Amino acid sequence: MSVFDEYAKHYDLFYRDKDYRAEAEYVSRIIRRNSPAGRRMLELGCGTGKYVQAFVEQGYAVAGVDRSPAMISEAEKRFDALKVPAEIARFSVGDIRDYRDGMRYDAVVSLFHVMSYQTTTEDLMATFRTARAHLDAGGLFLFDCWYGPGVLGDPPKNPVRTAESGTLVATRRTTSTLLPDRNLVNVHFDIELRDKGTGALATLTEDHGMRYLFAPEIEEMAGSSGMRVISAYRWLSEEPPVADSWYAFFVLGAA
Image (cartoon, rainbow, N blue to C red):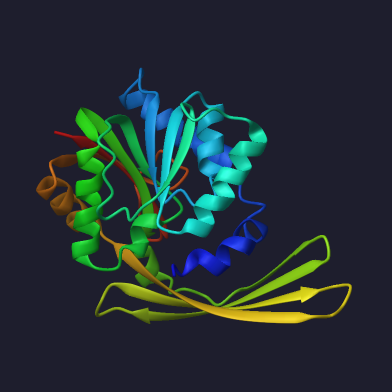
């Protein structure tokens, strides 16, 4: 079972304040600059479909893939309720390292640090090849990631986040361990779910390995998979990443 299968039930609760629309508008602006006519999109690691919904609102037809059946189930419920036709938004369960649907897209996107969940170089290369396999020459692969200089310069903290919905109170405590010999951070979550009415308490724990990346390795992996780096930015900025940037956004073009 995917690490996200249990987490999927409460994922959107923890991130309900995240501005998916603003982030999709940012990504769309960069896509239009490089591919003005592009409207067909594949999202690798689509989760519960929040970005897909925002991109559909931007005028894209989007295919979303995620390895978690629970996440895909939540996405499908969302779009069934919205009555969006399958030719505009569709979802598949699949591993982005080897997913192939035989289609070509104008843009492949992978957001909210999905690429940093590819913790080995082999996993990263496989995902780069997946992106390239779904692009014609000139197509775009756009992704954000944890950026190595920022992570090393400002090591991760251990926040506590609480969110409420109806009778549920969810509390997530984070313990992060930096593993610099592997370019990884192990992020451990202790999650408590409390029913405000009955006081019933449930707990679960999860570990998420996060790979932080550097520009030279991205350039090398892009070249090895038939792409090139067009530009790199600080996330939600149009300025290049700097030493204190925790999150970077890369735009690759298919050769």
